[in-house]
Length: 168
Image (cartoon, rainbow, N blue to C red; front, side, top):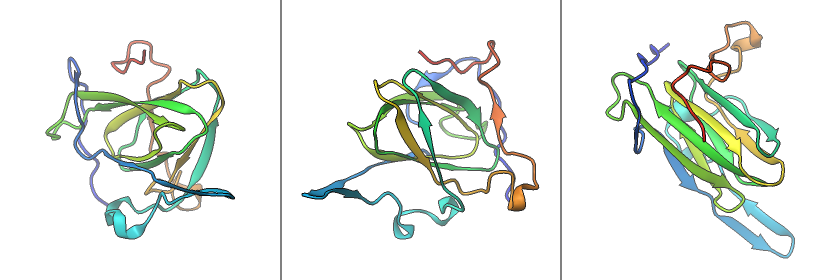
């Protein structure tokens, strides 16, 4: 198994792009029946990010999920609607060229996209829309490992009021 990235919280975050985060717009193909949208193809995704499981979550308007981070897991989020989400990212990977950067962006019904969040990047999203929103995740690691027998690869920050990861 690869070693996880060394992480440390910087004294201050700078707004900017984050190395290894990949965002790809989603194109929908519409006809009289509705629409179709491809969000995953092995020929368009580096092998290290190939999913091993998938799930969908529903988030109510105004609700935040995160911030949290993974030591080994990369998340492959699909923001296709319904709903609108503000995605917040913080790079705490000590060896990253974008260490100390943070970003936020809106994805969902009006701006459909996939977003890869690599290990060591703290992330959170908030439903900023007026309807419940769905997020699909296709991570490259199994939740709690094979047979759900391993420790969960998640460091949660949402209950730490003194943490460095602030949402507006």
